[in-house]
Image 1 (cartoon, rainbow, N blue to C red):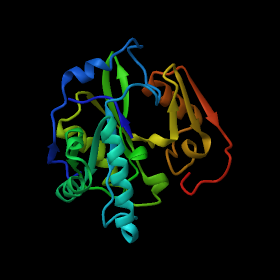
Image 2: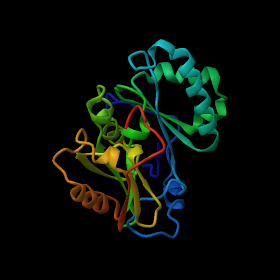
Image 3: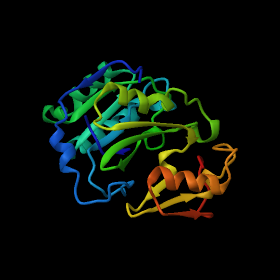
Image 4: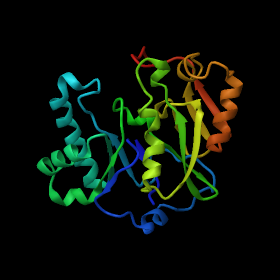
Length: 237
């Protein structure tokens, strides 16, 4: 999950380096004052939600953490890496054991209680509003209440409360929207799927027109493109 601004128990933040305001300013290239950027837009960093023994990865935790350490190496080699975990001391120890010390300056650990690791879907969506970043905290219900999710749904608010993001915060929890269900071209078009957003296990009281109006308003867009078919079935629609 990429984020584009800087400044889950929700109490302890461990930052290995302060975030300079110059970094925030440098990302403000010529752009509309109100927009949701595309994936290729300059970003401030990437967020990982780290696996632990109470997640679905428990039976293969060692192998999965090896994969996460490799991801952390490549991410922190290029940009700031934010790691969310209920076990910051343990994860910090792992990072020190397996990553070059020079990369630790690019890693921030934030203590949050978590159910699982799907940061793409439970993480924040960052929107420019009036030229200032806003962290949009949409509701996450684990793909239609398939799995426990109350801790993951609180991560964005917890990270924001830690103070590491220089941005405004908007509570959008009345609208279920996992981050992986929508895309933006940064020019006013939103791409989404009917299978996901129109599923009654997301926002059952809202019509297609209601959902489209909400997307246009939240992301300052002009059009929504709906995909009604795909190449195959997914385990988590």
